[in-house]
Amino acid sequence: MSAFLALLKRDLLLAVREGSALGTALGFYVVVVALLPLGLGPDLKLLSRIAPGVLWIALLLAALLSLPRLFEADHEDGSLEVMATAPLPLELAVTAKALAHWISTGIPLALMAPVLGLMLNLDIALTPALVATMLAGTPAISFLGSIGAALTLKARRGGLLLALLVLPLYIPTLIFGISAIGFASVGQDGFGASLLILLAISVASLAAAPIASAAALRLQMS
Image 1 (tube, rainbow, N blue to C red):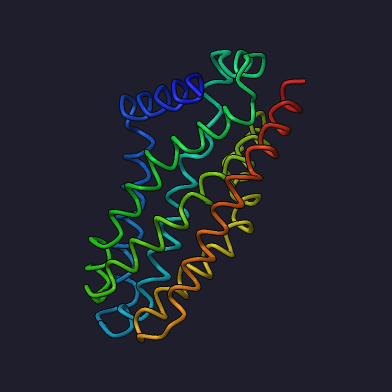
Image 2: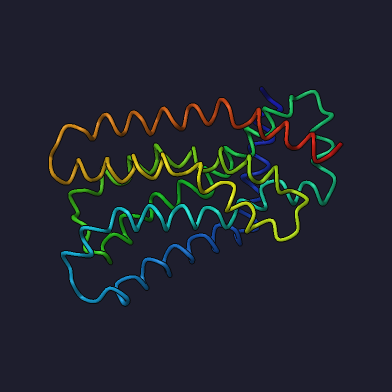
């Protein structure tokens, strides 16, 4: 457990020191949401109606920007080979790195969503539901994204291939994230069920994705 926590702390410190991945993701998030009202016009009712979907899609795309570097830097400096032969199982090492990605990227994006929602005329009363669904769903983004990052580790132009591999896996998270906010906006009882499904998707991703990612990494290093 100490090795797992040390790796998690290392990746978090690297994310804070570099800052470029989070800055790029946040900048992209802001630009996408800011440009949309310019394209759709000043119809506030339309913007309010589509705001949850826009915020979720922009968050998914913003998180994708930092995924290619999940294993790339460690592969370049040889750290990945050390992790593969260390006493800590590679599956746990992948879990630590994906968890660090969620903490350093997924959580800031989720917490920024209500501020950007104001640009889309999102009802302030929906802020708790928006943040809750994003905090429940973003772990799946990081853990499922680790599979794509592992599979495209040595691929040229891996960012595009990564998006093609990972985006279909994000569809359930996107559907239930948007539907949960929709239920909350009309006061129906489906919000709790959708939120639980989001949590279930994240838990399933946490259990299965590190195994698949570790297998892909071993294949890449063999």
